[in-house]
Length: 216
Image (cartoon, rainbow, N blue to C red):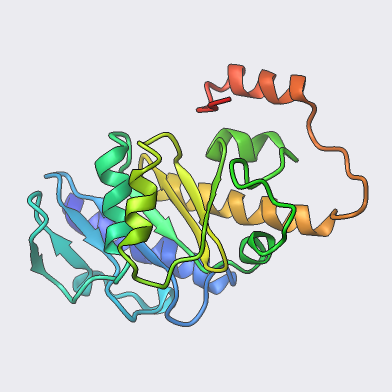
């Protein structure tokens, strides 16, 4: 099996796993990954994560020209913004995940650090997550907002919409976005319960030990 075929199969397998576990629903969510030649494979518009067809993924060449497959997701500006500003980005995943969307609606959330430091794994896989304001679905302004971060964040939360994560490859991106949603779920579960988050010293220790991107 060629590298292209393996990547197509992996993207569809991971997307189906996310769908089957309720991390996105209906025809929501989109996923993309870099090909060996510097192009992109992207989930098509209006498709379900549970039923992606490897042969119909949108295929872009290294110049950004659609060369095969169906029309891509309308959130392409969001994906390309991560690839253009983060040299390490090999994949991008966007979900409409219930708990993180619910958390984005709460007034006390810190826009600069969306997720509280409840476990080390949220820090290790995501760093600080930036909460972006509400945009209409497909609005190119979402991509401009990501570009405005100048590559300093690997994950953002679109208010009232869903999380977006970039990582070195598609498996890492899926693992990281699952960590984001699970941390949001923990946050909601322990809200108003005086839960003990990690201390500043513990956060600093995780950041230093695991070389986490963590702008103060």
